[in-house]
Structure formats: structure tokens, C-alpha cells
Image (cartoon, rainbow, N blue to C red; front, side, top):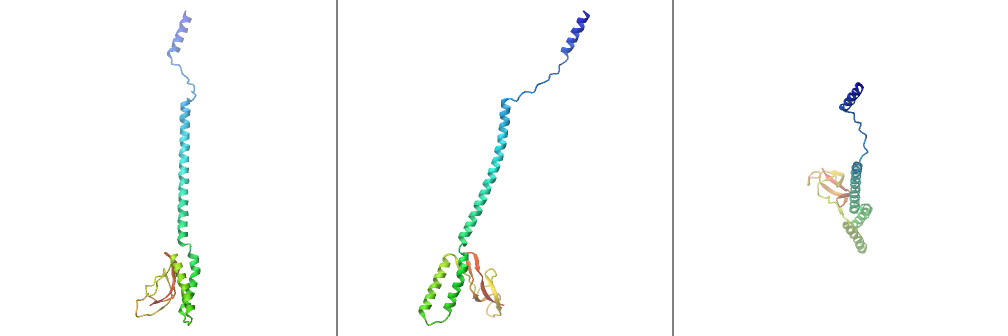
Length: 180
């Protein structure tokens, strides 16, 4: 009996002592897997939204740059042609300045001159007003100066070659003589 009592006591002690429970790792539930997948997909959506925003901004910047270039081209497309025609206009003025007895010749040159001026003005090419105006280095090129008592220093006293502008852009500076 003593053996039995010892055995019973040992069993009671074992029952009274809390046994260590080893928890087995549970497999993730389907809900946990779906939540992880949703988080992963939301991260991908955020990345793709960012890439889309960058691509959209690049496209808009390119569109704006191309529109600006087109507007500039449309506004100043005649610049090179006008620069080639200005010497012809100058030569017409020189021809008209010469005295001639042939009125038909003079009338023909006047017609050509007026048509050229008219065509250039339609495209925005205008003569720079210089005579009697204060010298402006943006529009005039001073070739010489002379003392003049009848006007203030820095005033254009003679235009040696007319200057022209295309809308708001300088085509050719007016070559002038100014007072000292």
C-alpha cells in the first residue's frame, strides 16, 4: 500500500503542477491570407498611382512646351524671310530717291515698294521710328554722333538705314546718327 500511496501522491503532484502547453503553429486562416493580399495590392495600387501621376505631369509639360514652341513659330515664322526682303525694300527706297525723267519707271518702283511694305506690315513687320526720338540701344545702333544745338544730347538726328521689328522682336536695328 505504501507503494500505491506514493504513486497516488506523485500523480496528484503532477496534476497540481501546470503542465507546459506547447502551442502548435496554426496555419493562417483564409481571412488572414486575403487581408495580406489586399495590403499587398493596395501597395501596388499606390505605386502605380504615383507612376501615373508622374507620367501625366510629364505629358502635360511636354504638351505645354510644344504649344509654346508652336505659338512662337506661328508668331515669328516670317522672320527669316523678312530679313531677306529688307534689302530689297532698301533698294526700292534708294531707287525712289534718285531723280529720273521716266515717270513710268518711277511709278513701277513705287508700286513694288508699296506692295512689299504692305505685305510685310500684314505679317507684323513695322519700321522703327527713330528720327527725332531719344536714342534707344534696344532699337537703334549709333554709327556716329555730332554736336547739335537744336536738340538734346542723345537724340537721333539722322537715320542712315531704317530699322524694322517683327511684332515685338527686333529684326534689324536702325543705324542712326545721334546728337552729342
